[in-house]
Image (tube, rainbow, N blue to C red; front, side, top):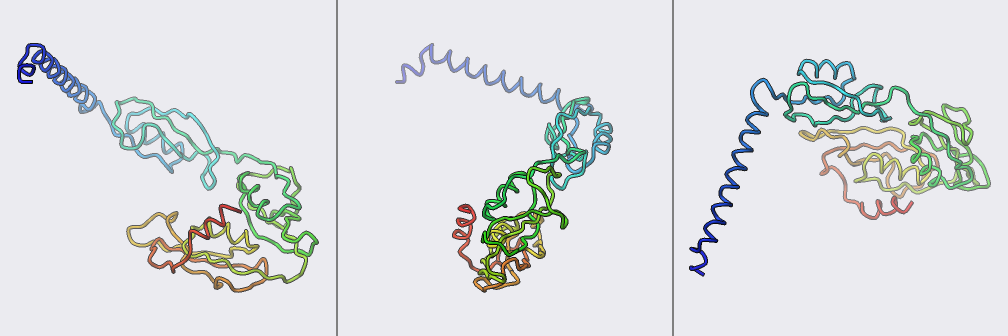
Length: 270
C-alpha cells in the first residue's frame, strides 16, 4: 500500500488533480471579478406588481433593457401589470442586459359557458370553476330535479349555455329544490382555507355571505389563513341557500380542534 502511495504514477495523478483545482479556482475568481466589477454589474430590481411604464422607468434607471415575452390573463391583475420576470429580482447582471417580462393581458379573454344544466350542483361548480369563472350565490328554486343546476345568472340576468362571458365573471347557480324550505346540515369549516371553505359551502348548497381575515404579527400572507369562526355551528340544520359568514386568521392557535383530514377528503371526492 505504502509503495503505491509513493509511486511515480500516484504522485503525478495527485499533482495533476491539484493543478486542475487551482486552475478552476483561478478561473472562477477572474470570471466573478470581471463580472461584478464596479460599474459593470447591476442588481435586477423587483418589478412584480408594477405596470409596464413603471417597469420600463426602473430598468432604464438601472441601465437595463426590457423585452416582453408573454401576456397572460391573471384574475385580479391590471392590464400591463408585471407578473413574472427573468432574471429574478436581486440577480447580478451586466449593464444593458435584457430583462424578460411576462405581463397581465389588457383585455380579459371571453370563455364559453359549459352545459351544466340538470347536473348536480357539485359538478356544475367544478365545470364552471375549471373554465375560470367564479361562483356567486346558490339560488334555490322549486323543481323536480333536486340538487341540480337548473339555471345560471349573471347580475340577475339569465345566462345561456355556450354564450361567452369574460373569464373571472361571478355566476350565480339556480339549484332545483323539490320541497320548498328544505334544510341541510352546516358543515364544519374550522382549519380550512378561504377557497376550501367556500367550495365546501357550495357543495352543501350554502352561500358564503362575508368574511374577514386577521393577519398575525410577522404573518403577512393571507393565503396561509384558516377558518377559526363560522356564523352557524357545525351540524345545525339550516335552510338550503342560507348565507354563512366566516372569519379566518394566520394565527393557527385560534383554530378549534377539528377532523380536518376527513373534511379535505370529502372535498377531493366531490
